[in-house]
Image (cartoon, rainbow, N blue to C red; front, side, top):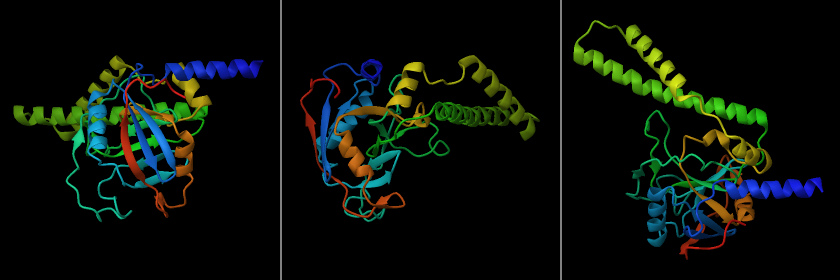
Length: 272
């Protein structure tokens, strides 16, 4: 009886998480390992519309899964890796980025679909790749890992904020032609960051999400840093099959690709 009640509780938790209104667009990815159906979230309209356009244009037809990290993610959508796993073998001008849509409540649970991007050091706006996306395949997360993920997220947020404020203070000092030294600017920036972090509060994973991470799985350390714009609603077993493909490093040794991508009718039934 206890096990039955636990199962019911998990279903209830999942229905409340990464849950977009019924009627959202669904996309079917026919892969070399089987079909995956993704629900796109209306809460991230820029990513939704961009993804739908790419699917309708046939961009994903035949593209490779170029990165597989067991217990973490599978990734695809690099236009330079359509015929070969060697980056640069294919020429493409689709290297644009789109504005981040990091929405509270859309998080990296198992099966989440997120937009790949470059790091904060070259991409402080956390803009997403226009074409590359990943699917989270990570398993259950221990409480210690959740605490570590929160710390990692907060450190990243603090570093990004410091970089922004330090740049502002340096520009202000140059414009005012002051006698402030670099040490003075660092001290001012450090104090401003401390005040801002105290005012805004530290990032915390809420209890509902913690339950999903503990019991279903996911990659919590990516939260608040990358845009989640969809969720696998059918075909998690196919995600697992791709995850278990033979790899060298993180690159598949065989042919692992999307054969065809298709936008399905809006209004499919809820998650399965």
